[in-house]
Image (cartoon, rainbow, N blue to C red; front, side, top):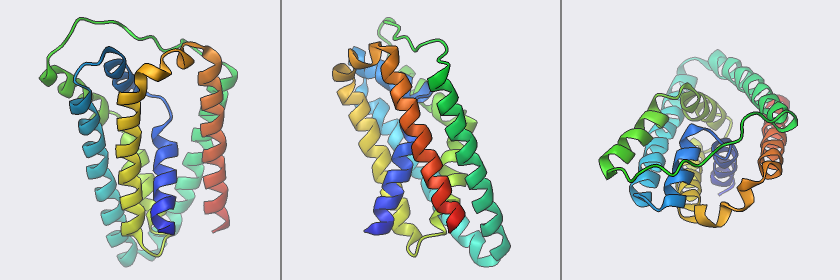
Length: 198
């Protein structure tokens, strides 16, 4: 249970950082267009990527013990830089996200857009395959860690898609995005510190 909760918390803190994919899910939720199809596409894609990361890195770590230490250090560096990026964006916010009230699109078009935003984004591979895969090797039960991470994806995307209407007013304010970015930054730094001290 401890490993599953750790996977859940880490995956959730990574996913919550707003990117193109999350903005698209929010847009679909606000407009109430194909929400179930979109959130399932995101969550299942994450589940596949997390499974590749956790399964693959566990197998590699057994055969190349040096690689685990190297990738852990790389993960720490990534988390520190990622945290600074979020913190910098909180201090110096750029263009705020906008919800474009586009004309209704078909379900296939919505799924296609979602797949492109997910699988063509290099950060998704760093977050799910490399980072979660590497960190999972530090736990006694990497499988439980992976299950927790997958559950976090389903929890987040369903909450984002179906809770979007309630969040519209809150995230219309730039301060809300700045607070969110600060929270993500401190979470990333905390995880990096925990990894660094072993």
